[in-house]
Image (cartoon, rainbow, N blue to C red; front, side):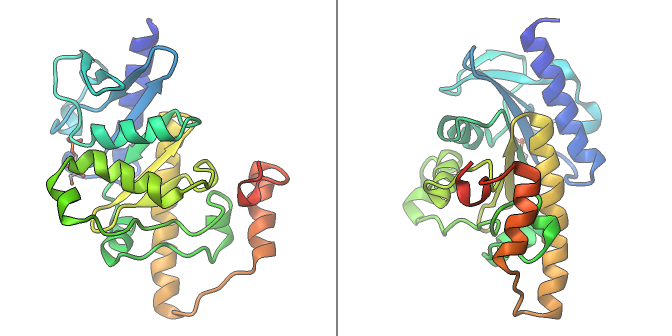
Length: 230
Ligand SMILES: O=C(CO)[C@@H](O)[C@@H](O)COP(=O)(O)O
């Protein structure tokens, strides 16, 4: 199996895992993976029902968005994925879902606060919500700008320490070292979004002390990983 065929298989399995975890319905969402040495991104085809999708349907594009292999049209979110790969050099996979609770926090325009150890095990801080896009941005290259606004939201923070974001009035994007890890982070994001929504409705004044957060995050990611030192 060539490295491209292997990546198409990985990306296909990751997209099917979105369905398996109940994170997408119809044709919503998408997962991609990057072959950095070859400068190729493999992504889900646009508008294809998951129950009709095959590994060979995955589309290969270069970092400028030009199709290099595949019969179908790449996902409509391709430009967003490409911005993230160019800005976040450590990531190997990107996932986008419209998972209910994550999309609800995005529609509310609220970051998911860090108030639980489940959250702290995977995200070292609140899961941020991006700012509003300007009218010019909305009317311009919307998908590329969606990526730009995500990158702007992170500033110089380590994206591997907060491997996900809520795009305001849209939905979550997550990433990781591989397509499978990006999907794992989408699963966690949806779970902590659900927990956060319930906790917030019970007590709007949620809090969590830094030491507990730091202990849990460093347990998973090693000493000094907290606050992006790792
Ligand atoms: O976010 C959206 C649309 O808002 C997309 O994820 C969703 O429609 C899936 O599009 P693709 O089938 O990947 O082109």
